[in-house]
Length: 195
Ligand SMILES: O=C(CO)[C@@H](O)[C@H](O)[C@H](O)[C@H](O)COP(=O)(O)O
Ligand SMILES: [Zn+2]
Image (cartoon, rainbow, N blue to C red):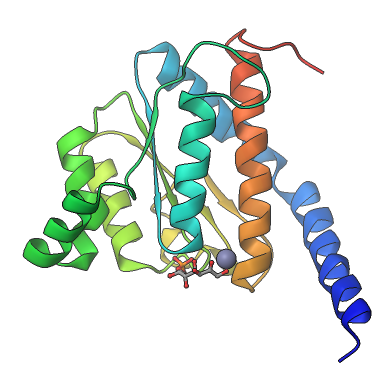
């Protein structure tokens, strides 16, 4: 294999998806930012959850809010529902894997919170059940997806659907958009200066 050509083609594809996402996702991004800012101003928090690489994204993004993004500033309330091995194993063992996030949202979610489910396919049952629980309890149920949004369409609102079908490329956009979300929320809350 020509490794140099492979490397360049990966970047070419990434850049094509980024250009499409930039064109198409400004409206749901703005809406999600506004919902998160309102939630935090109201004493609420952001709850992130997903599977595999999206579990890592949930942890990564929650930490940007609680600890630090680009510069020091006060903490912003956020939590990843992917990190407590006791909660995850007990929920999986006792209630079923589909209930992993729903149960934690039932325990920790408040109506002033925003639940953000992350799924490249939009069809992972535990993410879908988490979003359903969020809606039932009156939280904002929002999502990051790809592949047309899958079962998250009509369930998550705002819903950011990356216009691509491959999980890796979709995840690359999710983290870019998640970073942008953090930056925009900091500015809107007056905790960082606009560029
Ligand atoms: O990171 C990747 C693929 O890039 C994988 O770990 C991927 O996240 C896992 O296969 C997930 O289980 C896929 O779930 P989803 O995105 O369809 O909800
Ligand atoms: Zn991945």
